[in-house]
Length: 459
Image (cartoon, rainbow, N blue to C red):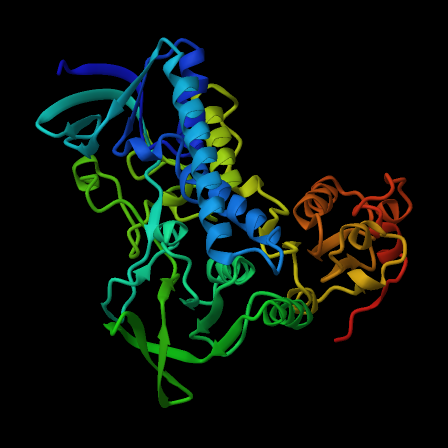
């Protein structure tokens, strides 16, 4: 293969990288985009993460008690695969049609500050680039306990488990573990969620965490707190988990195990030392507020830079780098205010800004407005769709009337939280939200009633 020289090299086809490649290519700049796996064209989000998992969550939520669990799951996985195939093909097409973008299959490794070798089988392509973007993302972290079992999966491989496990254990009580627990319980598995910590959903207020725990329990999920897994082994067609709970040894026998103990960066094989690119103690590429690495012509975007691991953060990383390359150069990670997130339970749980504990610690005079979804008379949508779990809480600065944070746990939470985040960024007051005109029936109109019920936050 002939060597090539480009203005920009992007390593990895994630959200930030592919958006940069397309934008720069359409400006007429020469771009090479390297991806080591054809199954990952378009990045993690559309292939193994956000889109396919939410498609499965949606399918699981629609299963009725009389529907055959195994058949329903098989059909859901087929639908998931059809969707990701379509999105992957379209993502490839969107860049392939840009004349100045060269798509390269293979594994990239730095050989110098501006030089990368890409290996595909016995072929080697050398790329020289003026600017380089590292966008290799992360992968599920390996457990620290011993695993001697063919029935152990990670968050990627569990999406194609066959057959649907009657008994599923999930090791890890983070948001990935919680989301999969809700999903598989809806599909019909008996789920045991093992959390090493003593506090369920420790980053949420207790009333929110308790409501989420009750929701999961209602779906049949058993939650084990303080569970210390020592190992997983196969035995007579099952997986046996050896663990201790409160210091007492236990065995849990299941059909499959999902290990969801975090993620780790894909940086080990990049030869970053050859380019003078530094990483932190966990292997994430270190960057400044403009996403420049220790080599100033090399940027790192998306999960690999150790920031919040959300697709929409990767998209904003793209905006910051584009501003560095051809804008004012002022946009930075420090501009990010009121970034929301959603845990896709059924219904979803979303939050932005402070929780109650953080509000108390802030030293402000704080008002709180909170209501259970089932008690919000002015919000009939949950009753219409038959989903009345959850609650809404909004925290307000008593002196300025500005929103400090909010939790929306209920139908359409992933949409309502975006409105509240925008209000926080733009300085819209709680009174303006309370007195605004919203469509009916909708979930947004809950703000009329919830924000009319403010009271001082207990210290």
